[in-house]
Length: 127
Image 1 (tube, one colour):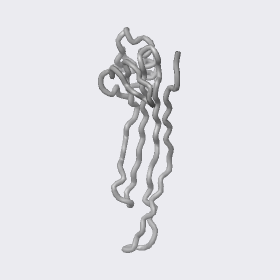
Image 2 (image 1 turned 90 degrees about the horizontal axis):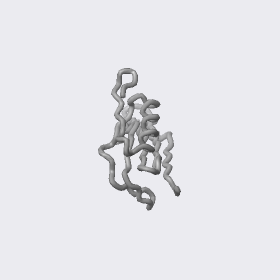
Image 3 (image 1 turned 135 degrees about the vertical axis):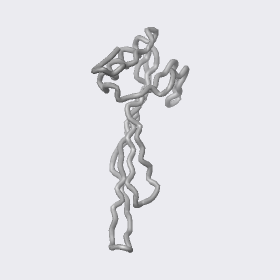
Image 4 (image 1 turned 60 degrees about the horizontal axis):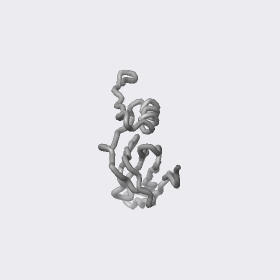
């Protein structure tokens, strides 16, 4: 399948519930995602075990902070789908760190601060 000239992978027909949701997400993201490896036979999320789990990562950019004078950021967007269940986990984390320098050279002090948020959602129960 193609959308705007980009190849869009389609999951096997045996994963009908996952395929429908994934294709909708693929079209929405227009190819800005990756499947994180092959299907996991099982995945445990918050003490619940799910079978046949696909992990879809839309964004996973990290600029680690190694020094208080550094700029740093994290941008993660990830979802996990289980066969015959649907969405079982979603994570969205966005933050950045600014160095916030004060003083005059050569006596510059850094009091870095972070701004952002993180949300993790997981399925509690299903039929």
